[in-house]
Length: 383
Ligand code: SF4
Image (cartoon, rainbow, N blue to C red; front, side, top):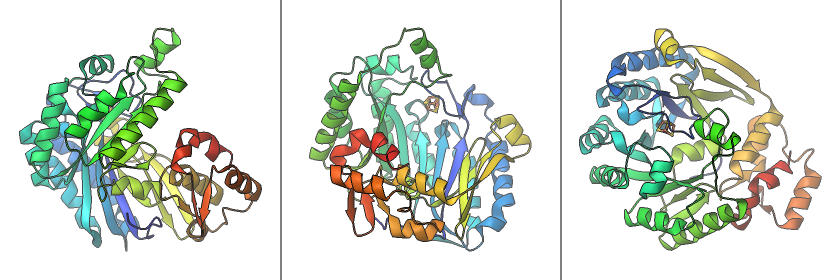
């Protein structure tokens, strides 16, 4: 992996695509279900490029580090509109890193062989596919539009184009005792990367309503911990390293865009509801764009923003960086935010080190992988 300390000029770009063919019952992302034929493909690219143009001044002297098309379901977007947007982004930076990582999130139901090839042709080098499971009962439970064969076809179609391929796996479902069946099925597809997320029940979703009415069961804590550890062991045997709490990769295939974010690097946000954060010296600012796609199409603009003070930046750096095997370089963090993260935490750090919850090598603080199941509590002790 590259250095855990981001170069201040390196800037990632996140492009939010706010539409899906159907809203999944557990999803609280900023997305809308629409009939795919009503998506304003070119008009959305136009709005993104207007948004980018308005940011041009803040990009001066920066180097493009990665581009991520997320959503929503970017695989519903026309490859021509995506290509035009990508060209605009690359043209807005004076330079970019060698071997720029360009990712698109894709859903199996909209990633035909033709669409995968067109995305590859448009410049996508990595496809992150929302598989979630390769077993029918789980896919039905999650309300997904694809079946297991459709997911396999999408993975194989993406791999055939030569891009790096990642798949999402959902775990923590009540009847998912045999997590290894899912893990083995994914491993058999020869993936470069897997993101394994626990099903969480969010208020305001269909699952949230069912849970409140006592009509939805998920795995209990012991089952969840067992699934986490069994999956980790099996992925390790297959050569997929557990490099972040929810992510596994073959060596060299870690998600660079996500690493940049976990390292506290700068990122520009484009698109409805997209959130970005850019720093200048030790100051930083975060903003969120207009959430409503219709209003964004009419006139892209910020809906909300905040200045990030040093303590907030330290807390976020610990929260995100300690999720990874590379951890947080405390000296580099101090230089970045202008405040020593050790001040006010000496006792908590000493206790964490004493308990074995934390490890300090030089200035690099990590949480040992065997303690990741308790990560939230360990990080909370530092606040
Ligand atoms: S496809 Fe993804 S973004 Fe869209 S509703 Fe389902 S989980 Fe949410």
